[in-house]
Image (cartoon, rainbow, N blue to C red):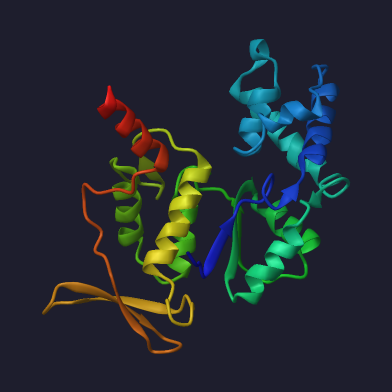
Amino acid sequence: MQFQAICFDLDGTLLDSLADLAHCTNKILLKRGFPEHPVDAFRYFVGDGAKMLMTRVLPEEVRNESLIEECRQDFEEAYRDCWNEQTLPYEDIPELLDALTNLQQKLTVLSNKPHEFSLLAVKHFLPNWEFELVLGQRKGVPRKPDPAGMIEICEQLNRSQDHVKLFFLTEMNTTGNLDGSNSFIIKGRWRPKQVESLLKKYIREYVTCNNCRSPKTDMRKDNATRLYFLDCKVCNATRSVEAIKAGFRAVARGERRAARNAGNK
């Protein structure tokens, strides 16, 4: 199985930033007279953006929208002074990025970390690798697991929003649509890693040239045969691709095992 473009999360995937996030957050809590949390506890607090981080660390009896927003603003201001004190790439990440670069695969980042800090972190901690696109949490763009950011990355790779949306909904076997603010509303609860896994599958099946592995491809439908083809702009290779079939989705290994066990009862 080969990929041309790889989309990484940032905190907890490429970078071990837990200590800095914990230190900064605990400073905010102490400032307001609230109890601190141990660093390990932040493994369960982080990952869904600064606002959700503040919601989780504040004592339940004092949580309200006004206090959460004040703490979020304080956090983002304080984080400017401590975002790079203890953060480091995880062990073996440099070797992984070297290997992917040697395979001519495009590197991208999609994070729930504020966009400004996502750009700073990639530039500061990962300066030796070229990232095609780095997107953090931005105003007006819903955070993961909403696939809006993933769709934006796919559009950068020259695929229509409707095609990406249909792929996600079909694979997830659910329903959803874009709302007035361009948020992709999907029925059900989905983890960020599930969305990232589907993005990788989409790129593999509908973006990458199998011959030269370039992402610079166009997809077209042959009206005579009703088949879809992927045309590479680099090597001029052409391959057919499966149409997205409503009602079909990839079945995970665990689901297959559960189905077999149910059948044996």
